[in-house]
Length: 135
Image (cartoon, rainbow, N blue to C red; front, side):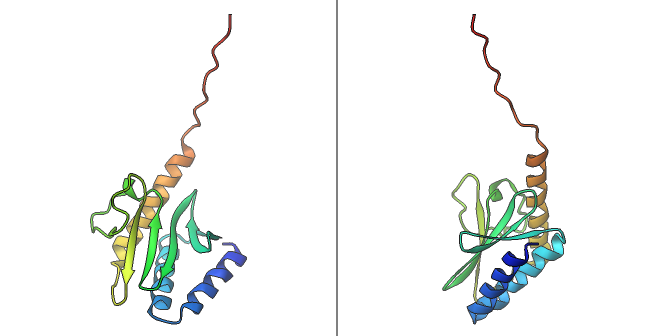
């Protein structure tokens, strides 16, 4: 993990000063439990967790904590944790409102599915466009 990014995430969590502090800290801990090798990054002024690509971002708004999975539409979600950005073809998000708890086991399964999707994409050979020979 990047010490600088982790420090910025620590600062964001501490600076929230309300229920979002515990919520974002809990979700971060669940991500780290699911993937001890997760890389913490700071992009777009938000925490980002990566492993062979972005797993999810953690955004905070006045009334919610949002975890956005860039490849969420391709992930299995049997517990229907995704409740936001459902209309898109690629990303999905989980909006957590005050007082809500996310199923830890189901969330960790989503994290592992996102890592698997990233790893498969990273392992896929790059297609090289063949050049046509001019005669």
